[in-house]
Structures are given as structure tokens and as C-alpha cells.
Figure 1 (spheres, helix red, strand yellow):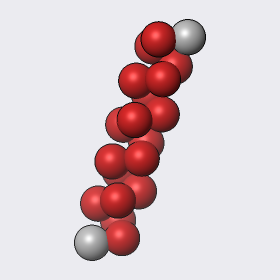
Figure 2 (cartoon, one colour; figure 1 turned 45 degrees about the horizontal axis):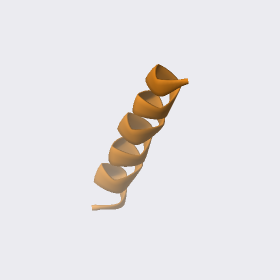
Figure 3 (tube, helix red, strand yellow; figure 1 turned 120 degrees about the vertical axis):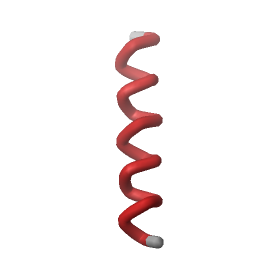
Figure 4 (tube, helix red, strand yellow; figure 1 turned 60 degrees about the vertical axis):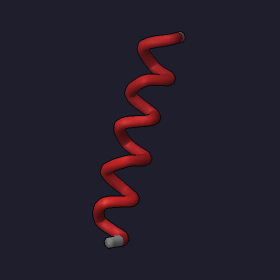
Amino acid sequence: LPENVVVKDQDRRASVDDLA
């Protein structure tokens, strides 16, 4: 499960970069 959380966090970070 922890790995999934990390992947989800990375995806969210990527989205933030797109907005920026």
C-alpha cells in the first residue's frame, strides 16, 4: 500500500507542475 501512496503523491505533484 505505501508504494501506491507514493505513486499517487507523484501523480499529484506532476499535476501541480502542469498547473505551474
